[in-house]
Length: 101
Image 1 (tube, helix red, strand yellow):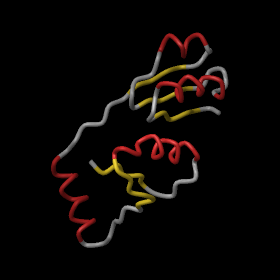
Image 2 (tube, rainbow, N blue to C red):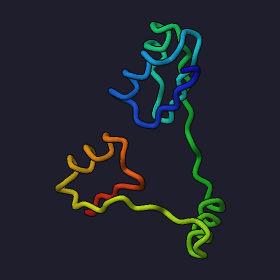
Image 3 (cartoon, helix red, strand yellow):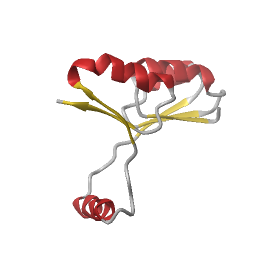
Image 4 (cartoon, one colour):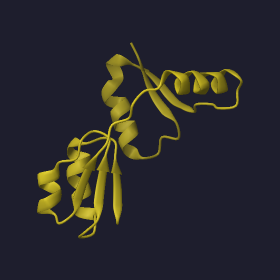
């Protein structure tokens, strides 16, 4: 891979180093481990998103109009967090997995 986009971090990020070609880049929204990147001959870059009230309001309006929809795969009680995590790790979930508190 030339680029890996990491939104999970931890073990997932650690496994990602092995699939990036030398000179490639890992871009992370949870913080790239730059020392690990250098050890694997790749570049690690971090970025953060800034919330924008006007944009969030616009997105909310599109949801309200039915122009944007969210696909929900499964709703589980918080006590089944492990099952939710296991489902997410299968790579077969089509939509969001929600934990209900």
